[in-house]
Image (tube, rainbow, N blue to C red):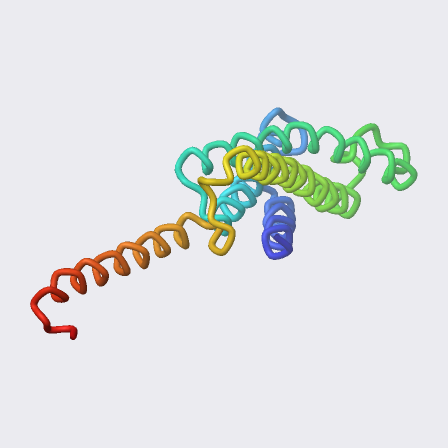
Length: 180
């Protein structure tokens, strides 16, 4: 997560330093929003990848991450304007205040936005784990206490099947006297 935040902050600062963010048109906020959503997509895919989610889990992660971005970007912009207002020197916008103030605002807003995205995914993962815990309590016969993951359950079923095959072979060979 910290690498994603660092790369996203460096990326948005590079956009600002190269002049790719227009300061006086609708294109500027759109470029900034695109950068926020691209970073949120990285957070969502990282979470889905590390937690080995299925296709539906990936889609849900991306949607929840984008919802977190929608909420946190507004909050992040508000917080940065309030914090940087004393440094604006009478300018009406952060863009008009200058490069250094705008750079700090972009970096801070990116960090707050990604924290919102991560927070939304954290809430989702807590909900998923709580829901899985309720399922385990309601259906204890469907869970395996020694191997809680589906991969471990398949391995356990494979081992149990192997034990049954060995027992069946032993029963077949017993009447012939091979095991006696």
